[in-house]
Image 1 (tube, rainbow, N blue to C red):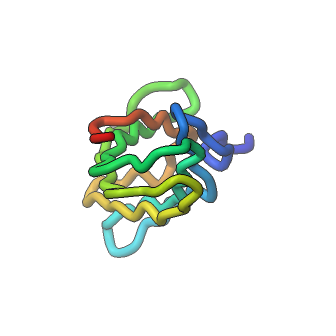
Image 2 (image 1 turned 90 degrees about the vertical axis):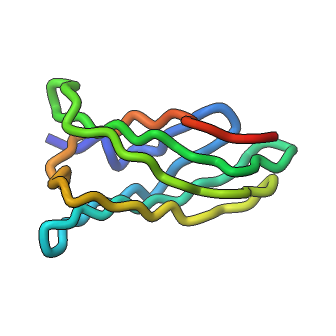
Image 3 (image 1 turned 30 degrees about the vertical axis):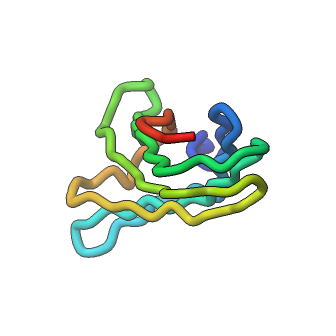
Length: 100
């Protein structure tokens, strides 16, 4: 069964792509590219990353700090947790906080 986590996610003017999860020494790392497709800078962007299994049940939710992202800019999101979420099937990403 193909994991949906690999699919590109769109939230507002943001496109989240190239999502990867790896588990190293009991630490799960979540990385992704975040692109601002809007026409204004988003400041202090923090994303909420809810990881779910194939039954859409929550495994855990983590926060990812992106920071300031200009129009057309692509930034690398890199966050980790000491909780093993490497078996996540999909991810639901929402904007937790930002300033325009």
